[in-house]
Image (tube, rainbow, N blue to C red; front, side, top):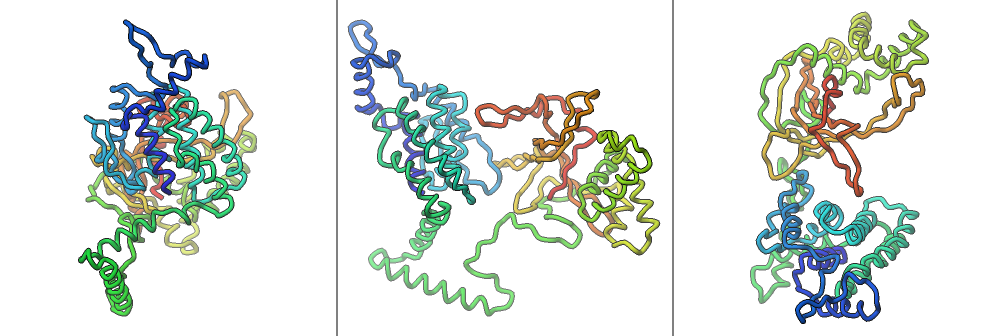
Amino acid sequence: MHIEKNVCESIIGTLLNIKGKSKDGLKSQMDLKGMGIRGDLHPQESKGKHYLPPAPHTLKKEEKQLFCKRLQQLKLPDGYSSNIGTHISLDECKFTGLKSHDYHVLMQQLLPVALRDILPKGPRNAIFRLCAYFNEVCQMVIDKNSLEKQEKEIAETLCMLERYFPPSFFDIMIHLTIHIAREARICGPVKFRWMYPFERMMKVYKGYVRNKVRAEGCIAEGYLAKECVRFCSEHIKQASEIGVRHSQNEDFEGETTVDGRPISKGIPKMMSNDMLEIAHRYVLFNYAEVEPYIEKHLEELKHMDRRLIKNESALQKKHMETFCSWFAKVIDAAGSDVSDTIMYLANGPRREVTSHSGYIVNGQQFHTKNVERSTQDSGVSIEVETICQSSARDTNQVVGKVSYYGVLKDILLLDYYTFKVPIFDCEWANIRNGIKVEDGFVLVNLHEGQSQFRRDPFILAS
């Protein structure tokens, strides 16, 4: 979507003053004095000369360098985008060689992060609203009611931009943003109509050109040759299919690993009895085949002690403490009536586990925090339903959703003799003091007290 690219170029060019001060911008500041408004932008006289104060969107040299430095040092997940830091010059504060997809990622995700706490609140919020608008419109699944709301808000956003940016900023591309939401509401998601697939194919076609005098003939011959080879490859055994891109983060079902595959050398490691029991309990509580036994155990606990029916916290605590041993006795008594998977789960894993620094699961690549890479693949998050109480004396228990954020410390493969279950050992942020929301950003402090998760640091890799 070239509108997005041009809007992003205009914002970055105006903030970094790449095009220099425009005459329209200077004239608009001179006109403000004649109209008697915006006194902070009126020309100021000093020693017989008139000086124009900086506009709200103007960045100081230190702020420009900070803006470029944030984008240069930013680490993104593997496969999310290209390394934008290689296209940024800190000395000159310039962006060079960015592709359309780079502007796509900058406009929707990275620009608000880089501008945080740099611009004044007014122009910063205007840019944030414009970025959120593009992010909402370009989603794979769109809501018509939401798009109608976006149509009204984009007009307000452009009015906010007019308060802080010079008239030269508002070209035809800025105006076209008004029509994008209506077009998406009528024609469907933007991803079916934007130019990225065509630009990628044009790059392929240009690669076929060997004789610039006969460019069309070269493209036609190259395309025909590729089609012939692709057709023949379908009838040749043990030949990889031509023209189909395979993801480098593709995971497959291994012979012993339940989910995903490791991408680093495994190191044998002995776990303590306490941590092994915690990891084993987490696997049982999150295994689909064990769910009927979990419900059965809860019913038995309620039948044994009627007081646990009204006290959900005490019931869950008792359930966690006794389930593993109860489950092993039940499966042992059942004998051959249960599946092999349930039988090995009941017996528990070996103390010796395998530690890895890299793992691929669900098409995502993960690395522990100690691995030095240009990408950042150690962040994890999960949303769970939990029982919330204001205090220990409060009997009112509310089930609500809570988001947990952490960083990957170790990747372990629990060995259940016939199969292995991958789990992530994480350092979780304190949900009370280590997480806060500011300007629409979730800020996580991993150095806050983490004692509440020492007895529950694990999460399944899936």
